[in-house]
Image 1 (cartoon, rainbow over the protein chains, first blue to last red):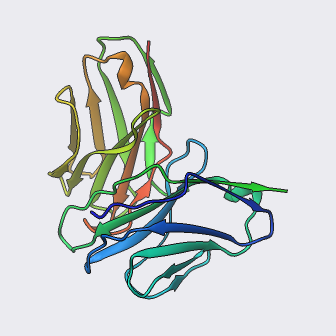
Image 2 (cartoon, helix red, strand yellow):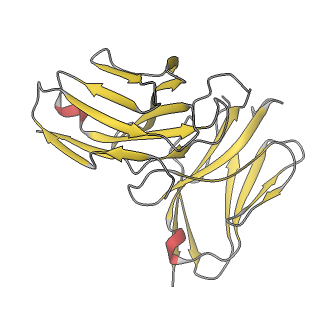
Length: 113
Length: 112
């Protein structure tokens, strides 16, 4: 799986959009970008994933650059409950093939009043 | 609530002992994954089972073993425990092998 680079920490004011960047310059054509978050010591929580196109769900939006070398996770209206460590993971997804998640150090997002 | 159940939530034991951690996957999920999270190593993949068969191994120690039973629940066995085995152990499950993984709340193991 391709290596990812994320800033170690970010701050965001409550109610504002949180934009979390991720660099994955060695990503290959069949690798997806996944985002998970971990609130305190709880189990990691799936947020969103995508291959090429931008994706949106009820939690967040994922913007992937055209060359796929970087992406941004957007939390449109951050709340205090979004304070967590956010992990950007690149992995191959092949049906029927074992596929682990390789977690890096992530970005610690602190949402403040 | 992810639908993945891990028991026990906390476990305190002594060095040299053996413990078993249990995981019940989400209904319908055939794959189970085990991860270890320690302060110095972060979240690390240990092992994966799919429909009862081992499918992938990470940096799992020889003292550790796992299995997935016919009802699809899984157990992670840790033996000859050392202080350094103190960590959070997470189980995740997915429908197939390449699908989204959903994590349980974890078992916090303290080896004294």
